[in-house]
Image (cartoon, rainbow, N blue to C red; front, side):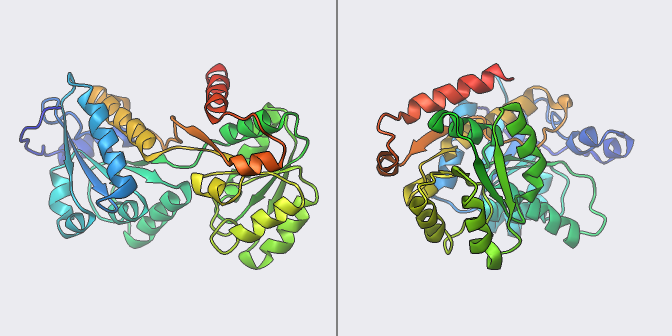
Length: 331
């Protein structure tokens, strides 16, 4: 990784001339004779955010033939000096929900690649930006999301439970947009799915009970209306009493009582983020990427819950390898 001073190129004229939005908003890449200036903006200066930064730095350091300049600043510093930081950066990388919301809603031209952010939070930040900035100028904004692909979670369910007959999936306001993707994926995998649209938290318990009555396993997707600190105990107790295993969406949910989950660690998200940065520096003309789901992942199993359901010979590492093989086969 080469660290050297650079002068921000004036790209206003090229913005006016470019017709394609991806070229218009990303013409600053490569403007520094091959040097890409990337500013990392963590939501906080510790914990998972630092793990993401460390993974980004480590992966880019391996690519010594590329010229990428990394700079990390605090979220408070960004808020105070956002205009200057935008002008001296080719790419902004907000890390986490707080940083993503703040960076996206600031005016500027530099492309934004948010990371370590749930899909629902990313979409909410885009919606707030549209509401707060009248007629916003063209700007490329994308993300490395935390949400696991539906196919990955369904593959885990199938590998764990064999020929499961009915997979119950509750969808709330933030996840109902996934309805068609779920139906398409389950048809491809030849799985039977029961979907219950949860109108509001007020109707959660009644509608969830109705879904459990026609399900053999419950697949949890990230949606704060359904799965939150207030409801987690009730949901897990209800499913346990009915002998219905839960496939979760995070390590914490498995620790609370779900049978298993696929998840991506901060280090894995950081590695994927670095690979996108490297690709952009190497081929800036290819266009800005669309939002991506996690490429790297692990499986976690609640051993106590597994034993209670009669699963005594499960290997998280083996399950992760099997899922990876299925994904490569279907690419």
